[in-house]
Length: 75
Image (cartoon, rainbow, N blue to C red; front, side, top):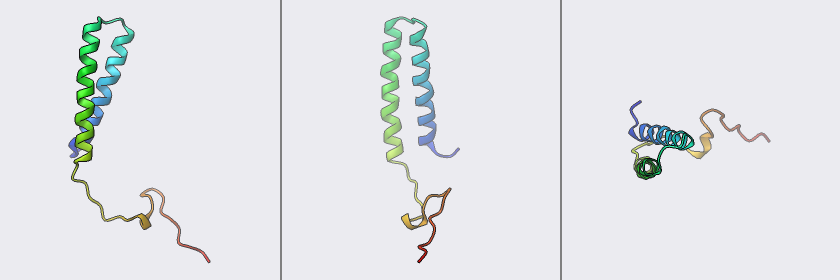
């Protein structure tokens, strides 16, 4: 996986799921609060990296979706 933004999104998702699991096991509030703040910072970094990603494509709207191409107009 070459895309750094996707790695951050996967890390952030896993981290926030971990925080959710830990909160259901009655971990102390200060640890949960600290982890939530770190998770929010990670989320902001993830959004920034996704928006600033240098992805480009040659596809246009007329090409349709990659998994389902639009059919030509039938008259």
